[in-house]
Image 1 (cartoon, rainbow, N blue to C red):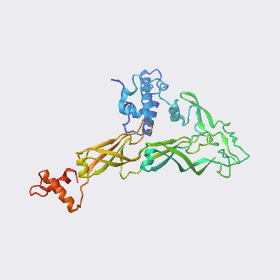
Image 2: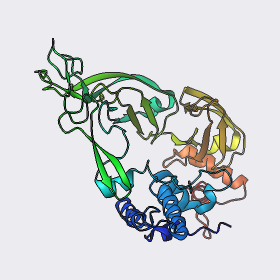
Image 3: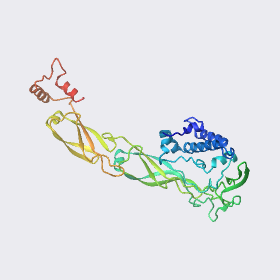
Image 4: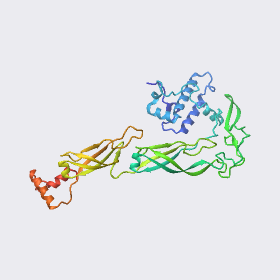
Length: 376
C-alpha cells in the first residue's frame, strides 16, 4: 500500500474543490515552499515536490478522475506517472510565473491559427432507418470560411501585413528582474491579438473576420445498427478555424422513434403475436412480421402462452459488423369476445370431453379459466 499522503490533503483542499480553488491552494503553497525561497532546506524542497506532484494530477481532469477512483495505486507500477521530480508538476513553470509576474515564462503562443469549434446536430430517425442505416443530407448552420476573401479577412487584392509591434511573432517579451533572477515575461501582442498579422484593408463581406454564418447541406452516411445515444462523427464539417486554422468536426447525435410492433434490446428485437385456442392446441403455421418482411413460423401443437420463438438473424445489424441479432416472438392467446352459437356449442362439447362444465358453481367456467390461463 502506498505511503504517500492523499493529494487533497497535500494541497489542503476538499475533494469537491473547484479548479480555481485547486490552483489557488497550489500557488499559495508553492510560494511558501519554493526551494529558491528556502535555500538549503531539504524539508521545504520535499514539500515542494509533494505539492508539485499533487497538483499535476488534480489539475488534469482525466488523471484526477482516475485518482478519485483508484487512489495512488492508479499511478504505481508503470501506471500514468504522477511526476514527483523537482520540475515534474508544472506546466513548464507557467503557473509559478503567472503567480508572480502575471504572464507566461515560455514562448508558447496563445493565439494565431486556431481550430474551429465542433458542432452538434440532433437527428431523429425512424426505427427502420436506425436498423438498416441511411444515406442522407442534413442542413447545418455554422461559421464557414468567407468566400470573398478565402478566410484571410483582407479585401481582394490585399493581404494582412506583419505586425510591427511583435515583428509577426504574436508575442511581446519583457525581461524582469526578480528574486529568482532575470526572467522573460511573454504575453500575447495586444495590437494584433496574438495573430502576428494586421488587417489594414478588411474584407467588406466578413468585416475582416475571415468567417461568416452560413447554412450548408452535408451528405452523411448513417451506419446500420445505430441506436439512441449513438454519435456519428463527420470530420472537418464543424466551424471553420480562425486565422487559417483547421475546421472542427460535426457530431450527429442519434435519437430513434419507437416502433408500434417491435421492441429493441441491443441487437435483438422482440414482438408479440396472437394465437387462437385452436392454433395453440393443434399447432399451426403462422405469418410473422419481421424487419425484412413477412416470415413463416411453425407453432407446435400444445404451445403454451408466453412461449418465445426465435427467428435467427432477423434482428439488428452490429454497427461495426459481425452479423445481426435475432427476433424473439412471444405468443399470447387471443380469446374471442363474441362467438356464434355453433362455436359456443363446439366449445361446450370440448369442455364436456375434458370433463369440465362450461358454467359451474365453483369456478369461473371454461372461458374464465382460459382468460386467466392466457393472461387476458
